[in-house]
Length: 107
Image 1 (cartoon, rainbow, N blue to C red):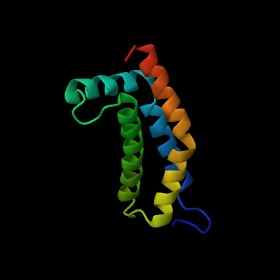
Image 2 (cartoon, rainbow, N blue to C red):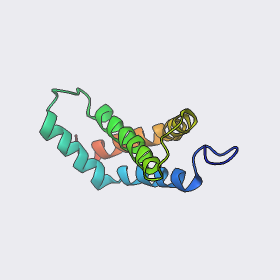
Image 3 (cartoon, one colour):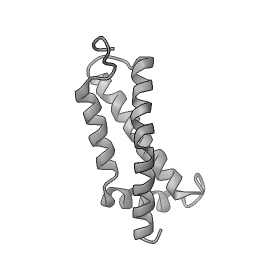
Image 4 (cartoon, one colour):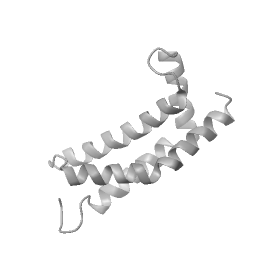
């Protein structure tokens, strides 16, 4: 915990939010979907929407842990819980953007 009452530093929180935004760019999602389709072809996943959602969430969490590692501070339980809250708050937006991009490209 960085300060009393603040779990994740506002700069790190903003960086996580921006990372999620970058992952939700149409070109980025299209490229990731193409990669999943060419590399895995249903072997590991059966639903491309869920695979992309997992990718975005995993990428955001990995980014968060990387930020803390660069500061020399391993994530504590409160940090992890707050990062989950960020993802939980944006889950509907993430799923909606994935649905939109996949529907637009006919995937």
